[in-house]
Amino acid sequence: MGRRIPPSLCARCKGYKRLCGLPTCPILERFRVHAGVAPRVQEGHVEGDTPPSILVGEAGYPRVPLLYHIPPGVHGEEARRHDDPKRWAAERLPLREILRYRSGMVAGVSRFDARRPERLYELELSLAAVSEKPVDSEASLEKPPVPTLRFDGILAPQGPSAPARSIRVASNPRPPRPLEKRIWDDARSSDVLVELYMAGVDVYTLTPALSLGLLGRLRSRRLVPTRWAITAVDSTIASWLLHRVRSFDTIDSYEVYHGGHLGNYFTVILTPGSYEAELIEVWHPLTPWTREAKQPVIYHIRETPSLKTNIMDGGYEAVRIAVAEHLYRRRRQAKAIIVREITREYYAPVGNWHIRETMRRILSGPPLARSDSLEQALSEAAKRLRSREAREALLRASLTRKARSQLSLDRFLRQP
Image (cartoon, rainbow, N blue to C red):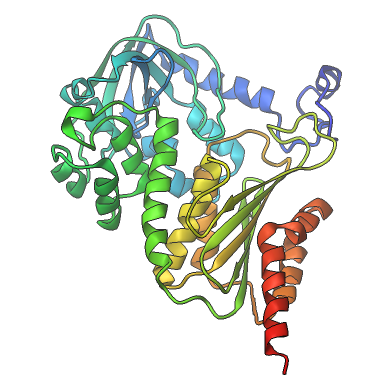
């Protein structure tokens, strides 16, 4: 099952025999959602509530694309469901439902000068992006939307799109009050991000605020590609939290956590000691990035006590902010070993929001196991792992070897 799915197999299967082993047929799913959206786009006019869902691209700088998403004919709370990662995670929606919501929006695409974010403010597009409630919107398209579903490892999937003649915000956006008060402040974006986060503004609002130029020094504000803004917000907030976590007392026992969603399974070991972290990603065959692999593909990301990582990775930053929030909330520090197993149930990438939310949920409850023994914690963690390769990678992890060496040294120093 580790090789690419041959067209001949798809031809025999016809989408219903599941010969490839995937839980649903991505090809048929794509046709279903496009058939549902097309009749609601009449003569190039799209009307509905943006959830909000507005994305800044990166091609063609300085005139970058802005995708303004509208679910045709959908309003209010039903529109919000088309871009609501926290609800998707809380309700544990299956992958096909999330793809249905994302594919049910049409994006009007316009280009704006990244050096002039105030233009989007004047049109209320940036305000619509950070509204607490869905915003009534209209878009006039130059041609019928292209029936496609685009996937990305960081962004949520993008549905049909077409160049827009015009985009109009037809109702009043309502940004969170703390954000609204800071829009015209001439202050470093990193400082404002942390202040707003501590005031209760969610990262899913802070990201478009940064991306659409609502934060930062007034003279140096720019439109920032949404993909970059997601990672920047996670990294900025997590680093601020972890700088404070490093001053807390350490936990006094080994803790094991486990959980999953959308075919992604996370096993976390927190060990006593000063903060540092290691993420072990185990990609099983037949995931979006391992179609041709014959065995699991594994790689490690390490963060040192000085908060430096060996790789800049948006998925790791989503893990990191959840760990930082957990330790800051407890007023404790620890070393964190995280194993993420991505199985073939994850047949289409939906962005890294699910990493952040799954880790938050796992760490919001009590540990599955707590012990005074590293070996017992490793044993408990290994029981939850789905492959031999993942268990071996856990035992070979840098932090695992480091913890074992430290225990050996401690036992030696305690000898009479």
